[in-house]
Every structure is written in structure tokens, then in C-alpha cells.
Length: 254
Picture 1: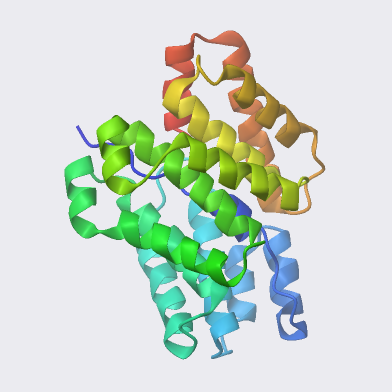
Picture 2: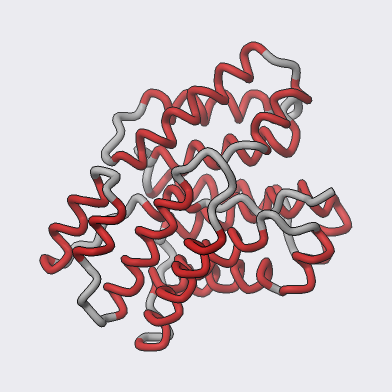
């Protein structure tokens, strides 16, 4: 049976908008969930910012579906992120979008196949590199929070030890992320989903707290609305279903 790989903290990272005036139309389209239009608006720019933004739009489109993201979109996003990094190897968003893309590639793989790629370690290294340059990058903190939880879920204590993952480190990253961005829906949603998939009974209080915060926050983008809807669905499952059933629900969600 194929395992479900690292669930990305993509949503939170994808929700950020580029500040440059050149991307105003693209940003507006992105906020409205018009990802094809957002891509087109930035299609003629050949800067690191533009390539990273295009990677962002492709990943947002991929993640908004109910099924596993189409591999073709992930490959295209990875290519755009790598173009950004070819122009600027230290580009923060380029590194984050590459980390997201790599993790999505791992998602349908078995544990054995995923471990052979080295993508799990590389995605972690990319996010940690961003934090080294920008310790207050809450998107990177959020990504790493979920990374540590997912590694423990899939690999157990031994696998987590080999990969250098721990719930203690996960919580440290999550707490810093929500301190920096208390109104970010994606932070709450992905943390709750990851914990619910790991052990819905043991982490019930944390799960409910995070989901409730996600549901009660005003969404700023169409992507926020998607995350909020999924948070509401999982919160309902938590209130109605047995822990093992909640875990299965969480595992099936993006």
C-alpha cells in the first residue's frame, strides 16, 4: 500500500502576495482564486520574483482540488521555482516553493520510495535555510512545524530520530509561526490537520483549538476560504466521529 507522504504547509505559504507593483494584477487574480489568470499576468516577466510567483500560482491551483494534486502541475511549479533559484540561489520564496513542490512529489510515494529521493531532507533544508536568513519568516516556521509532525507519523519514533524530527521542535516552530502571524488561517489549519492525522485522541485539545481559530478568522483570499472550509469539515468530524475515523479523514485532506 502506498503511504501518504509529507502533507505540505503549502496553503499558508501560498497565501502571501508579492508586493511589487508589477504584480498588482497578478496578485488580485491570485486573491480571487483565478490562478490561470494570475499566471498569465506574470508570464512575461523573467525575474526571480516572477518565476517564484508563477510557481506559487501553479501550486495553489494544484492544492485547491479535492484529490491528490496532478503531477504535471507540481513538475511545472518545481521548474518555475528552480528558474527563480537559478537567477538568485538565495531567493526566499523560490526556496519555499521548491520545498513545497518536492514535498508534493513525495505525497503518493511509499515510505521506502520517498526515502530514496532525499526530497524530505532537502525540503527541510530549504525551509531551514530561509529561517537562517529570515528568522521571522512564519511560512517557513509553519512548513517545518508540519514537516516534523508528518515525519513522526510516517516513520514512527525510529524514523523521526533518523530524520531529526520531533514533536517538541514541531511545537516550537508552530508557536513561533502563530506568534508572528496570529490571523493566518493556513497556520492553524495545517497544524490541526497534521496532529489529527498523527493521533486524534492524544492531541484532541490542540486540534480543536487550532481548528476553531481557523474557522473564526476572516479570510483574506479565496485560498483562505478553501482552508477555512476544510477546517470546518475537520472540526465537524472531530465532534462527531471516533478518533480513528478522524485520523482517516485528516489523512485524506490537503
